[in-house]
Amino acid sequence: MSAFANMLVAVHADTNIGTAADFRHPPGPWVPARVVLARPTDTIGGLGGLGTRAGSLAATVLAGDIAPLEPQRGDELLLNGTVHRIEDSERDPLGLSWRLVLAEG
Amino acid sequence: MPTPIREAALAAIVDRLTTELSGVVLERARRAPVDTDKEVLPRLVLTGTDWEADETAEPGSTHYTLGFVVAGYVRDTTDLGVEQGLSELHALVVAALAGWTPEIDGLGEAAEQGAEFRLYDTDESAKPAGEFLARFSMLAIAPLGSPYAA
Image (cartoon, rainbow over all chains, first blue to last red; front, side, top):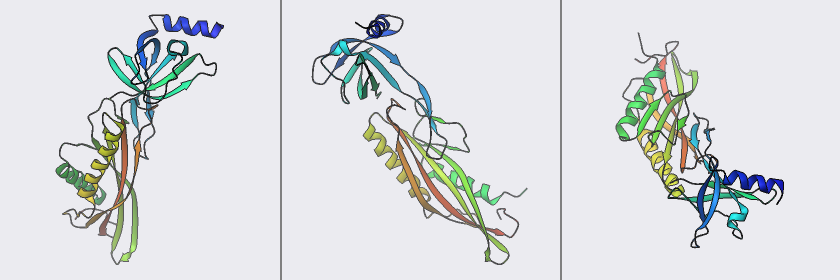
C-alpha cells in the first residue's frame, strides 16, 4: 500500500477519529466499514434575506472496505442505529476513499 | 408622538399575519440568520424594504410605495415535504396579504410582487429544509412632508 493508503487506514482505525458503520446499496446486505464523520455548521446565503445556519453531515469511508460497491445517491449508511440516506458521493483523486454526503430525517 | 406611516404599515402587516397564520412563528426586524436545525419552524420573518415617494400624484400629498418581504422557513423529513411545505406556507402568506387593505387611514392594499424559492443543498443542510422570499408592496398616502399615520 502507498503511504496515503496506510495513512487513511490508520486514521479510520483510530477509535478517537473513526467510527464503525455499515454501508449498503439497497436492498443489498449491510457491509461493515469504518468511517470518519464531519458535521460542519455553516451560514447559508439567503434569498436576499437573512440567510440561515444549518449543519451538514459527511462521512469518509475507505473504498477498500466496501469494494466492489461504489456509493451513489440512494445508498444507505447505518450509524449508531440510524439509517442515513446518501445524497451524494465523491471519490478522492487516488481512489482510496469516498466522501459521502448524508441526509438526516 | 405621531407614528411614521411606514411603521404603521409594518405593524399592521404583522397583526394581519399573526391573525391569519396562527401556529406559525412570526418575527420582525430580525438580523441574525435562522438556524433551520434548531429553531422552531415553520417561521416567517417580515422586513420592510424599499420606500418610493411620488409628489406629483396628488396636490398636497405624497404617494409612497412601501416595499416589504416575507421570508418563510420550512423543515421536513423529506425533500418533497419541504417543497410542499414551502408551497403551502407561501400560499398562506399570499392569501393573507395580497389584496388586503389595513384599516388605517392612508394605507392602501398590499400587492404581491413575486417570490423566490430555494431548497438547501445537501452539502449545506443534512436535514431537508428550505426557504422562500415573497415580495410585496403597499401604497401609503400622507400629507406632503408629513409621512405619519393619521
